[in-house]
Amino acid sequence: MSRVAVVFTGGTISMEIDATAGGRVPTLSGADILARTPGLDAIAEVVPIDRGLTPASHFTWRDLFGVAATVRAALADPTIDGAVVVQGTDTIEETAFFWDLLHAGPKPLVVTGAMRSAGEPDHDGPANIRDAVRAAAEPALRGAGTVVVLAGTIEPADDATKTHTAALDTFRSLNTGRLGRLDGEMVIVERRRGARRHVDTDRTADRVELITAHVAMDGRLLDAAVDAGAEGIVVEGTGAGNTSLALLDAARRAIDAGIPVALTTRCPSGSATAAYAFPGGGATWFRAGALACGQLGGPKARVALALGIGAGLDEVGLAALLAGPEDAR
Image (cartoon, rainbow, N blue to C red):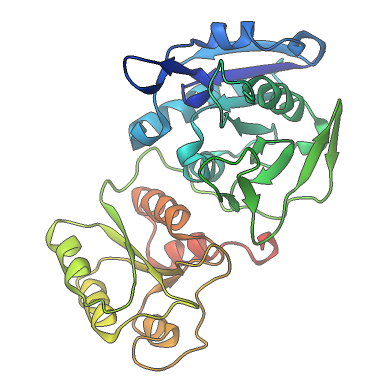
C-alpha cells in the first residue's frame, strides 16, 4: 500500500462555528480531522504531520519555507510516495505555486483544503482529503510537481485560481485547463503537465509589492512603494497590460533605480503583451524594461519575483523565471 505524508496547517477545514466569536474559528488538529475522514485506510497509509492552526491569510514567507522544508524531509523518505498539504483556501493559488517553484523531485505534492467548516451540512473537507491522498499516491502524477485538488479536480499550481469566494468548485485553471479529475476511486489524468518553472533558494525578497492599475490612476502609489523600500514591483495592467502614462513614468523611475518591475494583467486569465504601443501601452512598458510574466497573474508573479530576487537572479534570470518555459503554457 502507498504511504502519503499529510501536513496539516489549519484553515477552514480545521474550523468550527463559534457562537461567541460569531463565525468560524480554528479548533481541529490534524488528528481530529483524520478521525472525521473515514475511508483513508483503504487508499493509503497516512503519515500525519501537524504544523498548527494558521489561517491561510496569516502565512508569512517564513511559514511557507517551513512547510516546504517539512514536505522536502517527508518526501526524502523512500517509503513515502507523495505528500499532501492541508491549508486554508484563501491563498492556495499563491502557496501552491510557491511550493511548486521549490519542488524539484518527481513525487506528487498535493495542496487541498475545504470551503465549508466542520459541522456544516455540506462540509467538503473529508472528501477533499480522500481525493488529495489518492492523487498523491497516483503514479501517473509523478513529475507533475505541485497540484491543487478540491471538488474532484486536479489543477496545476501555476494556473490554479480561486474564482469564487464560497463555491465548492472555486478552483479553476483558466489558461491551460485542469490536469485531470477524480471519479470515485479513480484518478483520471487528462493531460500531462509541461515543463515547470523552478528556483533553488531558501529566502525571498521581503518587500515585493503588487499594484493594480485602474482608471484615473497616476504614479504616486508606485513611487510610494519605491520610497518605502520595495525590492521588486509587480504591476497588474488593464487588458493586455496597459496603464496610464503617469504609472509607466513611475515604473521607469523604479527601473532606472535598479528595482525589477514586472508587468502582468489584472484580467483573471491571459497575459500582458506588446500589442498596444500608445504611451502606457504594454509595448512601451516592455521597451522601458518591464519584465513579462507569461500567464502568471499578479499574486503568482509576486511570488516568483520574490523568490527570484531572493535567489540572487539577475535581470536575465528573473525574466526567464517569470516568463516560464514555452511548453508550460
